[in-house]
Structures are given as C-alpha cells and as structure tokens.
Amino acid sequence: MAFAISLKATNDTADLIRELWEELAQLESRPPMVALDYLPHLTLAVYDAPCQNLLWSRSQELFELLEKRKSDVESLSARVTP
Image 1 (cartoon, rainbow, N blue to C red):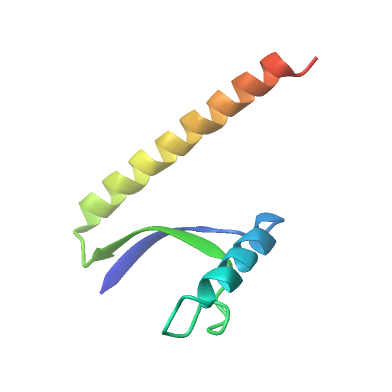
Image 2 (cartoon, one colour):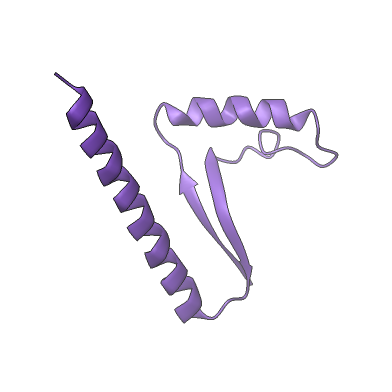
C-alpha cells in the first residue's frame, strides 16, 4: 500500500490550487485532479509501502521545517510592521 504526505487546503488557498489544477489539466493525458473531484491539496511525497518508522521520521522532519519557516516569516513580519 502506498502512503503520501499531503497538505490539505480548506481556506482561500484552495481556490489557488484549483486554478493551478485547471491550468495543468490542459497538459495532462489522464483525468486531471479537478475531473476526479479531489479536494484541493499539495502532495509533498509518495512512498511505496514505507516502513512506519521512516514515514513517521520524515513527517516529523517536515513539520519541524514548516514550523521554522513559520517562525522565520513571523520574525520578518514583526520587523517590517510599524
């Protein structure tokens, strides 16, 4: 069984993802995401039957990186905002 790490979009970013999918659909030979009625998301990685420990480890690394990026953006925003 394959596993994937995806970010689901349920807010304003969902519309941006759907627009991107519409543009990419013109280049696809198989049914596009929109035609399959998938919820807006970005797939970051797909694993073919990974061991559970590897999947957990990679997920933790991803969330730590995202948290650091969020912190970097907040720090920058604090310096720019009057």
